[in-house]
Image 1 (cartoon, rainbow, N blue to C red):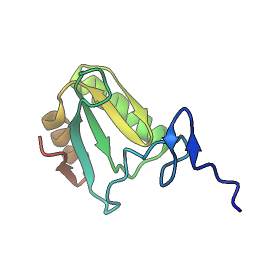
Image 2 (cartoon, rainbow, N blue to C red):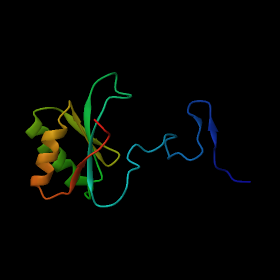
Image 3 (cartoon, rainbow, N blue to C red):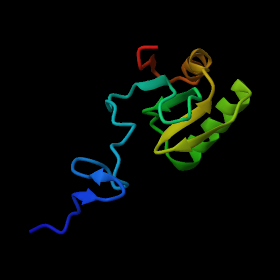
Image 4 (cartoon, rainbow, N blue to C red):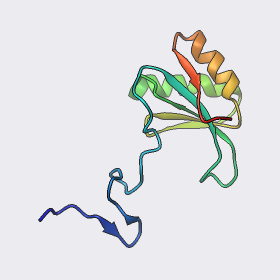
Length: 110
């Protein structure tokens, strides 16, 4: 029998989920295209713009996030290999990333 935990009283059913008991939010296609979408679920009604699929790691990702925050004039963070920018800044982010040489698509239907 496996030692893998499949149920937790805190998180519920853990089958098919990541390490922390939740499905990964960035489970998008890995096709080399950066996706930008607007989200508000799970954020107390606050709207944020999220950038998924960047082929960067660590310091490079943090530096790009800092440039985006300065350009948008808002706050943000890097979490789970995604850049989160406060507010609905999707159009600006798409233009900025295209200027940096990334292939970018709007995602999420909004």
